[in-house]
Length: 127
Image (cartoon, rainbow, N blue to C red; front, side):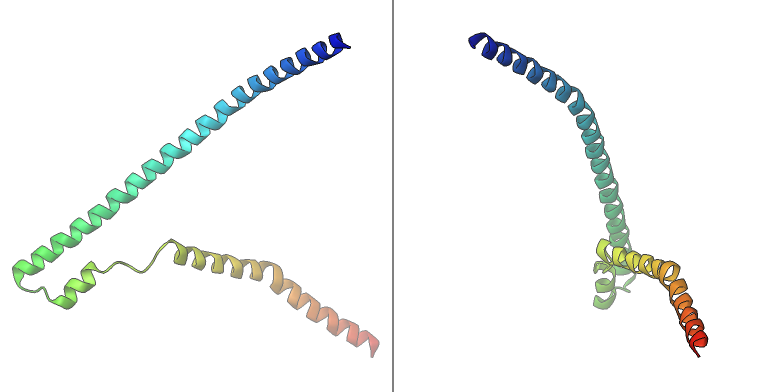
């Protein structure tokens, strides 16, 4: 009885060590993929950030030139400095709307016309 328990405990320890070895091997892949995703995200953030800074520098330069020339008014300055209203969610909703319309055109319109012609043929046969 005691030997059986010791044998089972030893087998369980071996299977646990094998499972941990498999986990280590599998986790290396996940860590490298996670690292690549993190680096890609950081690069994207840096690119977007520098693009925004360039836009603001151009706006500031235009404001300075208009100020120098005496053409800068409050209205013009407001229009130049106000943030654009477009963002990620509005463009995504527009794309989803177009995708939905394309799907409806492809899937629903042919069936709509086919069912109308089928109804007409069944009515013609019953008369």
